[in-house]
Length: 347
Image 1: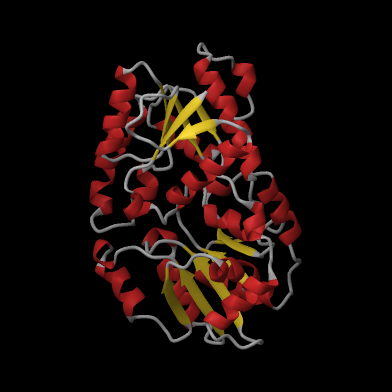
Image 2 (image 1 turned 120 degrees about the horizontal axis):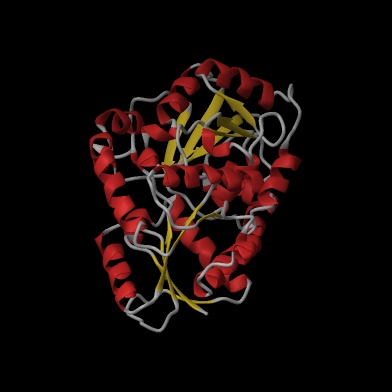
């Protein structure tokens, strides 16, 4: 079995969740001994596993089909999570949906991160088998580490008693960035740090202005940071706050859980079945509710749920994801599909 992992636009979206998903796929396949290649010019593969949806991805799918190869499309993207992102995204969203359906319908099999995103795809009228497989998490990388935590606090010159709230994501309205800043305005004693980046010319003026200047002094937008600073931030902060309105999974949530960090989320459908309020995270719906929860969590007035959160991350480890991917790969090669082989991930 040899799999061609294809990813288009590495320089543009390589730092996004989709970019990290590819890195996780490579480690996952290596962990369970599945051979893969990234060489898009090669014809020496059995399965094309596509992660992106640009014109080059479409050409790769067409080429693979002409060669008689099996095609798996990893459906990271939906119309719903394209909205409220780039300039003009809401007007373009219906066309994006048509394009996604066109691409996804050519695959022999679809993979998507959660049962929620699987239901969305089924609602598009797609009829192929669809497996819900998490993007996974590299547990070892996000274990709390004192040296990384010191590096984080030193990088931002944080005093020992400074309470810090972090979030990670692209500069999209969909991610809840506006709410993040509005809440920070009402909590001046807390430091709010939003990690992430996207070319500012590509996002609406309202969001661009917030990131550049229209935010209070207790909010920091440091851009994209990798390595020990961001990894230390996950565990050294007092709370990971992710007020996103729409996700297909949210890799950053898994990263926070793996860091044994308290997590505060907006209550949205993607978390149904794996994130549970007051069990492995806390959830809210309004800014006032978020403010109250932030105060209670950081002042230890609510139970610490990090142990249960870490257990959730363990269930989505890189090795476990590798096993699930291998089941799908083998099922595709063994067509007609043996449903009993992957009953747990295809429903």
